[in-house]
Length: 270
Image 1 (cartoon, rainbow, N blue to C red):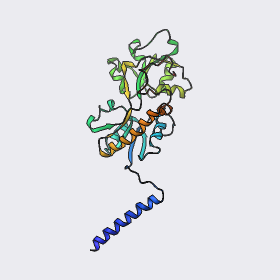
Image 2: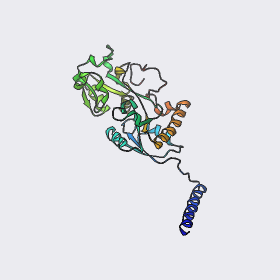
Image 3: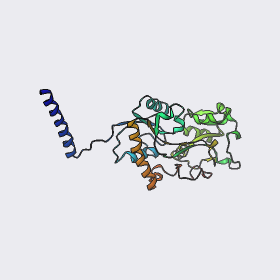
Image 4: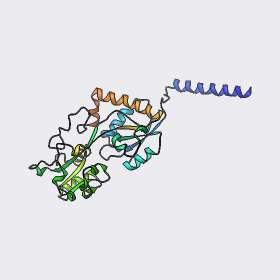
């Protein structure tokens, strides 16, 4: 009898606490906190840049019931942390690329955010020739971002390409004549050029290299919490797209799902 009375008392205390919290104006989160692993991008996602994806995350999670613990780290670490924790999610990532290390049926993804593409960059002084292929160059004079797996689909010559740690270094090496061209991700390279205050320094191929395009979204493990997180994120993504706010948030360089197929002009800044 005492045990039953104690149980009733505990329940009453719990109910009282919930009521007290509500009366105090505090909200009880609808979802459990989600560990959101973020892939660090120096010109777009650092947690302090106030650019592109940093702004997007603030827009998505402000005013929603989603509660997240955000942590940005290099791609390999972020991917390892995500794969080892079934209660976590990952951003930004292409589902197509993720399928190389995770079973397609084991993950769920959000609506599309934007599209990242691989493009060929050359000095503006080479305006007399329309470079659209890496075959136009000695492969030992073509650079790319170290760790990028996107070059592996460009044929056997990719093994001769020069891996460089950052977009800034690629840009400077091209400017100094130490490279003839480099393969860069858009919009990362365009944003790096802006940060260097040289938006018109390079020419970019008017088409994506070998049509290498990566639709970007949030991904979670296929669990009840993961699905709830994706549902909550999708509401905000759809609202941003419908209201036209996605362009305001991501800026002029973003390639959105509604944009024309890579009709980009000669200058990176266009």
